[in-house]
Picture (cartoon, rainbow, N blue to C red):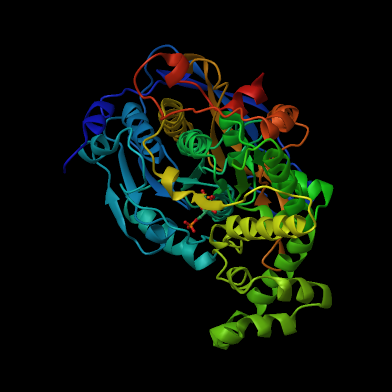
Length: 547
Ligand code: FBP
């Protein structure tokens, strides 16, 4: 396989590990935990896996004999930089437990487990993928593991391969399913344990025990580099407003982190828009007002960052989406029979009066995008909704209205962008390379300790890697009950942007100045070689949260 010069050098990088897991470990257990909400319901639903303690590993001198283990690994959901290093850390970790240990990768996500598609991951394969982006070593997929027959099909292959521990690398939904699987196998007394790893560029799988999900660091750095380049272009040509939508699904963490890195003129934060109960027209008016004020200074250019999930946070849209979700999950077959050209009017007629009015008022493209297939977890695929175009068009319309009233005298030309796939498979930054390798290695320690129902947890990551804390958090501790796909379900709670948190606070304190003055920062590309102050720097979000 041909390789770039950077790939060749980067393959030699040795990810840093926390000191505590460099040798043999002993397990320290804290007090029993409870779920974050709906405690009684969660306890009833997960009698075997709830109530466990948080565990922390401490270094133990000497070498304990450990039998060889066979482990399985699955990459689940969207790609995130560093996944290969999680697998490499897991591989090295189980080999350290016993060189006779073996690792099997299930292909193309949870589907590989159910359909018995797998590969043994040998040292040769692992070495090919160290420190690389992507999930291509085994592929990923969004099959939802939720049915007993899937669990049983999984058990067949796990038994056949002698696999006693399965590691599922995924986001909140995939780890929720990992919890359900762990509970099922424990309840059935099968000799199979399930461990999770926090993955997603969205940054929304975090809490007191999980500092960040892997991939967030690299993806934000890639987007910030490109936004910085656009800002330089825009400050050079001085003729375009760039509307930039950023991946991240519901939460605005990516948009906020990029804003902290590049200091754009505007960054919309969905969680704030929801808290203020703003309408779409109010959002458009706020953007148009900044455009108009900058035009007064002769600055007919600027940047607007838009979180992918914005539309779901505008209260009227949220109600509409909720009704659409329930309606589509109940009447999907009937809906699919309707001719494409008639779908919008069909849906309009089915909705309640207020939702129907809003739906009918939308441009046809956006109305259609709102009814596209949900993902297997019942979420709207927000990446398919072109909010950046919708906003750019609506701001243009508002400005021409103001122009005709003599309230605006500038020039407005918009460019739209959507950044998501550009960053999801980037070569991991040092932070992600180290964090991921440590998460995988920690997962091997959880396997060595015979634990199930835990997510691998590496903390204190703003310190140097030798001081990181490694351990495990019970899945159930992060759970609550939410309304999904028309029913109430136990799920790991998504972390949205905290409007009282320091990252949002730092943004809010500066945004008025960034709006009017041109204070762009140009972060430049990720650096893999050079001073640690540049190469090992975590995200601004994490630094502020830990400050
Ligand atoms: P995960 O939550 O599975 O990590 O996915 C992240 C993500 O990149 C979101 O930001 C985005 O909305 C979604 O995946 C897009 O997924 P797909 O490419 O499968 O449509």
